Structures are given as C-alpha cells and as structure tokens.
Length: 224
Image (cartoon, rainbow, N blue to C red; front, side, top):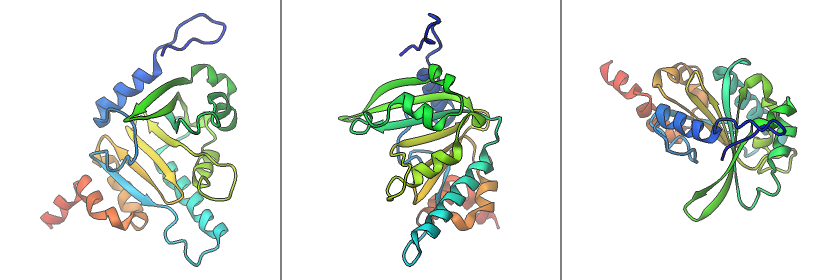
C-alpha cells in the first residue's frame, strides 16, 4: 500500500515493506505476532504485576506502570528513531481508527500523513496493522503504556491491541502485552544481557531457563 501525503500528490515509500525487510534482516522474523518472546531467538520476558492477590488494584497498577516505563527508558532515548506498530483484530478495528490513534497518542498531528495502514491475515483471522516511523519524543509513551496495562481492567484509557516499539538503531523490540508482562527481543544478545543483569528480579521465573538459553548465559555458567 503506497501512501500519499494528503494534498501533495507525491508518493511516499512503502513503510510496511520497509518494516518487513527490517525485522527480517535483523530478527529473522517474517511478521510481528505474539508471543514475541517465543517467536524470537534472543529475548527476555519480564513480569510487571507479579501476584495481584491481596494487593489493592491501585497499588498493583502503580507497580505495573512503574516497571513498564522504567524498562522502556532502559532501551529508548527521546531522540531515538523508531517504528511504532499497532495491530488490532478485525472485531476492534472500528473502535480503533488510525486517525484516532494519532490524535490520542502522537504529539504531532501532522504525522498522520505518514501512517502506513494495511490489512493482514493470520490463518483465517483478519487484522489491521498501523505503522509509523518517528522519534520517541513524538510519542506519548507513558500514556500508551498505561492504556495497554489498563486493557483488562476497569480503568480508562484502554488500548486493546498489540503494540510494538522498535528501536531502529539499537535493533531492539519492546512489546508490552498487558498488565502481566512485556517481551523485549534484540538482534544481539549482548544488548540484552546488561538489562537482564540489572532487572533479573523482574524476570518471569517460568521462562527463566529459556531466557538464560536465549541470551547464551547458560554457556557462561557452564564455564565457571
């Protein structure tokens, strides 16, 4: 799908094709889809909320918001160039129009002219994929992360879709799937190991052995 800036008559590059080539070249992934951690060779799965039993919702969500933003800032700086990708299933796409997404979560409304939109299929299910290439400073990051965390809660705003932040230069993908956790994958394990070491206590224990394997840390342990 080729985009045209409204009123200019000038065709822009196909951002969807650029994204596909980028993730294929750097992550050996044909298409973004959940669960990102299991679909990738090098990654970490973080637990955001931990056990919510016995914890008031406000306290639980405060922890989710804090961890998701803290991990985001470990990877991204304000001037980083990113692909921002939303994927919404066909049942919800009428509730999540591209222009509405831009208005709520992007600071510069003019960026709507550069939003790539295409319909994709996964088996027999249809989805709408929206792709924007911009800088972190153009995005209301905290608002997006909170809306993703709220999607299964009786809290607004909600953002019920897949959302991927991709650092173009650092070659890292950040995908928070809901209040329970987030996946972080990279082209090189070396870029994730410092984050693993600093936030090991936030690692999802169920997947810890696989995380260690994906990062090549089992080899280091074997050499000790």
